[in-house]
Length: 189
Image (tube, rainbow, N blue to C red):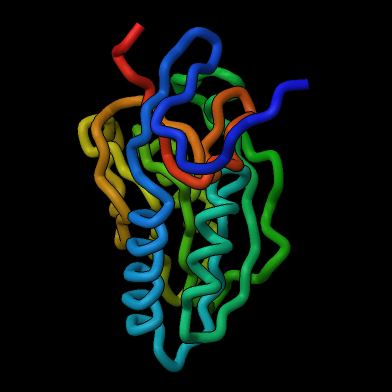
């Protein structure tokens, strides 16, 4: 059984691929706190439902709601568009539906990463069947150069280049979500 150092290593080698430190735990936590402050201000006096997109957003969403100064409710979708590969399949499948009533409610969708925008477009189509008071999207990461769909992301943690990233909830074949920092696939061989 192999062990993974989830601390502050600058480099990881996984399947003969090199991943280098990209966003440190400290940088991520500072930005999450800033996002939570902005969202708390925007939803002052309201009771929004934060809907996390599983599995990737669970770490980010947990830290985000811990930093809110407002009350909220939570629920989760589970969508799949990647499987075990590093590139989206281009098809989104619903694996877990919501357990809450979103009609006449303020909704904040929480994503780990917006790449092509396909998952957000899929979620928007789902919400067209309901009547939420408002719906905003909060994503830890966004790859602006990868967007293929016109989607609005209201709260963005970091805009990043079109590179494969792991850690802090983001996986590689369902592993490495427990890394405290975010690592990027290096061009190094």
